[in-house]
Length: 152
Image (cartoon, rainbow, N blue to C red; front, side, top):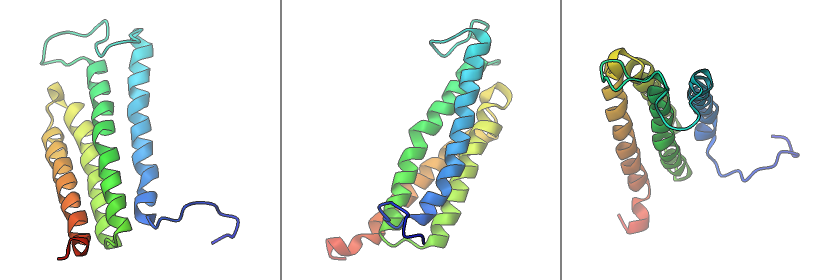
């Protein structure tokens, strides 16, 4: 390590390694929203001027904003929980595998779910349930890692 490197050195290399991957995908989702907004001239709201109320053909802007929003709603909490696990001595191979799985679940939720036929592709439910499982499971793992604090 360079002596000129600054940072808090909190000991979260696995979480830190995953951040560029998650941030890049988040940026792609944001780009899609912006691209559709500019292309349709819709700068406020989640339905483009071409949007229809028909559920069989969801509006592209609605899909893009929900894809982006859902990622923003779930991933920061997941990464925070993961960092807490890492700070409390979690096994790095478990965290690396868990974060890789979470990334695949989030990509599947959008690319094979929301962007699938009628926004109901199989990736949507798999990604949703898998993400909830990740949040609950990783939270439980953190609680287990800190059990000695509570006298167990």
